[in-house]
Structure formats: C-alpha cells, structure tokens
Amino acid sequence: MKQLGAWLADVGAEAAFRALVEALPEAGVFVVDGQRDVLLWSAGAERLVGFRRDEVVGRHCLAAVRCVACLGACGVAERGRVSDVPLTLQRADGGSVRVRKWGSAFFDADGRFAGGVEVLLPASEELAPVPEPAEVVDFHGILTRDPGMIEAIRVVRNVAETEATVLVRGESGTGKELVARAIHEESRRRAGPFVAVNCGALTPSLLESELFGHVRGAFTGALADRPGIFVQAHGGTLFLDEVGEIPLDLQARLLRVLQERVVTPVGGTRPVRVDVRIVAATHRALREEVRAGRFREDLLYRLRVVPIFLPPLRDRPGDVELLLGRLVARLNERGSRRILSVEPQAREALRAWRWPGNVRELQNVVEHAFAVGRGEVLRLADLPPELRAPVPAVPRPARDPAAEMREALTKAGGNVGEAAASLGMSRTTFWRRRRRLGL
Image (tube, rainbow, N blue to C red):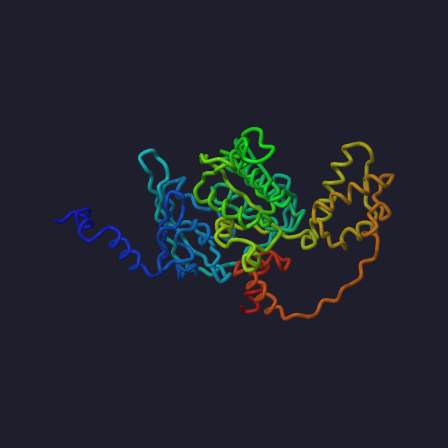
C-alpha cells in the first residue's frame, strides 16, 4: 500500500492541501508563517469573515481575524495547539460572526514558531449581546467606567500578548501615550526600553535624524555618531505619536524599516538590525489623509494591524466626576490646599463643558481651581472663565438614525469600533441599535 508521503510527492503537497481546504466549504481555513503573516486564505474564510483573499494574504493575521473582545486571542504559537475555542469575530462589513477555532503550530529545529494552520467553523447559536459594563477600571493610570474605554482596555490587554503593530487613534489629551505604555508594560518587552517621540514636534530634517540616527559629519553640527530612537528602543517598544505628521519622503523610509527591520543612519551606509515593537498614534483619520495624498496607503496598512480607538471625554460623561475625584485627591496630597467637596454650580459647569482638550484639559482645570481658590470647597468662581460662562444650546438637526449609522460605517471603512466611537457610543450599543434598525 502506497505511503502517504510517497502519494503526496506524486500529486504535490500544496495541491493536496488546497484540495482538502476547498473540500470544506463551511470552514474558514488559513495558514500563517512565523511572523503570523497570512500565506493562504480559503474561500470558506472569505465567506465566513468577509475579507477577500487579496486583502488578507501577505498581511498579519490580526488584520482579518479580529476578535470583538480580544484582538490578540490566538494562543497557537504559545500552546502549539488550540481546540474548539469560542470567538466572536468582526466581519469586513462591520457585523459580527460567532465561530469556534482549531489550530496547530509548527516549530523549527530551534523551537521557534514557524507558522500554523487554523480553522474557523461557524457556531450554531445566535450571537447574544454583551452586557455593557458598569464597573470602574483602573488600568496603568487609565481610570474609566465608560464602556468604550473599557473595551479599548480589553483590546490592550490582549494585543499586548502579541507582537502586532498597533495604531491608537484619539483626540489630543485622550490618553494615547498611556495606552502605548500599558501595551509595553503588559507585553513580554516590559523589561526593555519604552521610547516615545512626537513626530509633529520636529522639523523633517530633525525627525529623520531622531528616528534613524546619524553618523559623524552627516551634516553641519554632526560631531559624533548618534543612534536613532529605533536603535535606542531595541528590544522594547517605540511609540510614534502623531505619526500622521511624518512627511511623505520619511514615510517611505519608515515603511522600509517596518518591512525589513533594519535602519541606516543619515549619512551612513551600514544598516543596523533592530528588534522593536511599534505603537503609533494619531488624531487624524489616516484613511482621509491617504485619499488626500498626504499619507502612504501601504504604510497605513503596516501601522494599522490592530486599531484602538479612544472616545473623547465629552462622550464619557460618567468619567468626568471619576477623574475629577482622582485629580483632586492627588493635589490634596501636595498640601497647598485641601478640597473636600465641590459646590453644585461648579459640578454642573464641569458636566456641561465639552472638553475639547479631553483629560489633559480637565487636569489643567483642576490645577487652576487649586491655584486661584481658597478653602475646602471647589467653587464655580475657582474655574476658568470659559467654564463659568453659560453654554448656549446648539440645536442639532434631526437625522435619520439608520442613515447616520450607515454614514458612520462608510467613513470608518466598515470598522464597527471606529464607527461607534465617531457616534459617541460603545461597540455594544452600536451593535444593538444596528440590529434594532435592521441594518
């Protein structure tokens, strides 16, 4: 009787494997290499998750296998095998699908992860809504009871277990660097350096030298070799804040570093290999920047393997008083003034304010109140003038809720989390309203 190995040699292992995959039309089968980039994405996976083969092959698996509550939940590389794991995945059209996952890993002679085969099967039971959490979460300095922020924290916890590149989007002051530091502290790289750079605070020439370093004599004033922040962050995490401000020519160099994991200093010829986990952040909608020709689409896909969206403070009303209490307690410890209560008028002004500067602005307002006021009560008179002025009501035109949700999904490219954040609601609330409206 012919042995399996000999038969595979006759018909071809790849042909046999593809035939097996396509014989399972209900199963979503995909294969990843040692870097978790997708090598094969079956027709069943296309039907189940909605992402086309050409959108997935060659990209990190988390670009398409997106868990609703755990974007990093894999385990194949760590455990070697996973069996019948229930997951809820985000579909390309913004919906959700409940699946069960099986997977097996392969390892090289040195025990390094060399890739794996994973299988997704649709679960039979109907997707049940996840109850919105009411608990207070304090996570690496991020204090919240808001469902959208708690969901972002869940993503942070799970993605930290992987090496996936993360793009954090949120307005100025929402805590993007806190999220980046939390990812670092929760990751295997926690013992390595955490290096942060604000890409919008430097001129293009200084930014190039800051990112990639320079050799002596590369330009006027370069009196010695200087390693760039990629080298400084070797073995750790590099936080690129306001990555949308990087000029196009430097974007091309950054893309090469992400692809090849080597940097060449300005004026140098010898490339230096680096081992760095990238967390980028922006307040801009990078898809719109791509359409405007100001940001490279290929770099966007490299950076946006796992997106995390931070809702603004104005959409987290329950967090204002929570954060106010923490900030007052911290300043009380300094001893210059102790505030034991907040008068109702001041509390109402803080609730009504739109917080364009988000948590950072709230911190400045509390420090202002401590500095200008006296006594144990925080009064309306202690707040900055703009908060004391009556806030005029701005009538909002009535909108069709269904049309509003469709528009938000279109602008977010089908990403439910981003669409929900743009409407000031959690993904769970968005999902419920969408289901109620029959979208």
